[in-house]
Image 1 (spheres, rainbow, N blue to C red):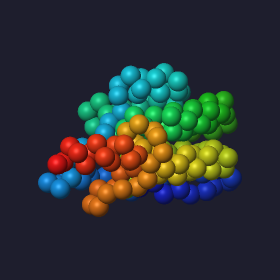
Image 2 (image 1 turned 60 degrees about the vertical axis):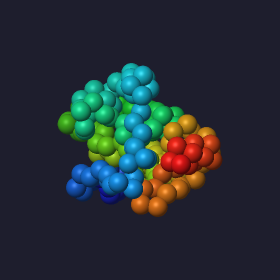
Image 3 (image 1 turned 90 degrees about the horizontal axis):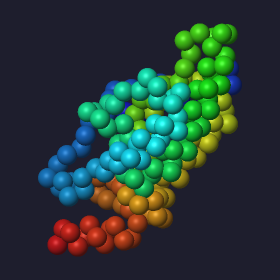
Length: 170
């Protein structure tokens, strides 16, 4: 799912297009899409109760469709959105029914995509965008410095994981 952002009154909000499809081909089966460990997911959910209060997993019980290496980035974005959600909650008397909803959090084309809808300040929007861009430089499996790699399936991997995958395929 691709998020398109629009600005209204000094605040940004995201609008979504069609949901994503999973890419699975015989060439890509060795690169199974990593999913975040449940313990790390639980830590993020506990740290951001306002944001994830009404959240429902998109697929079965998968909330964060990325590897453990991006845990810190997902947590940082979640904390930014938690602060924005609490800000909106305080304004609830002025603007009822306004809240931030998390849509999809996943890896797409070697980049963290954090889809959400709701109004956020310019500062929060800029910080979220910077954290998403930072994901293109961190291995999605371990968080060490990495780079985008791959042919039909882009991922961000460090040299150690590239070497491990190469040896696994031989």
